[in-house]
Length: 139
Image 1: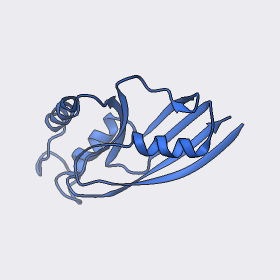
Image 2 (image 1 turned 120 degrees about the vertical axis):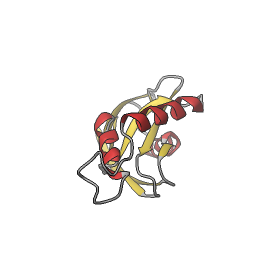
Image 3 (image 1 turned 45 degrees about the vertical axis):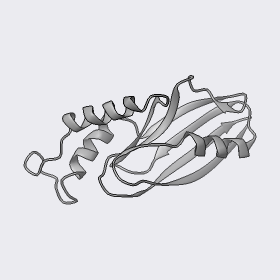
Image 4 (image 1 turned 90 degrees about the vertical axis):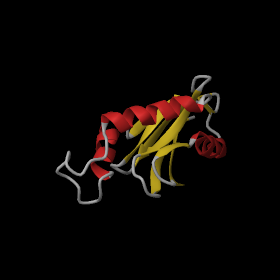
């Protein structure tokens, strides 16, 4: 059994979904493990991780529209406004999605479904550099 850790930096351009699947696949290929478990953890409280459909971009658009209605920006709605009107909605979005994913590794590849991709979901309006902690355990 072998374990490997790594950190990926992902530059975002503001709110939205960023497909990190290709970056994860490239790192996994370098590790040359066949079977195991990949853990991906985002080290932030105003961005998250989701496994979603990667074929039809309307899915991501509809998800963003849903979260905009669920956690709208508002200067009057929230007490926490120190970092701007998009910060508290970002925390709510993070609380409702995931900060950590566990993905099985099978035959050297993530065991994702046909239409699944792994996305960093940036909840803030401005660009950020987000850090993903990776941990791979396997053989």
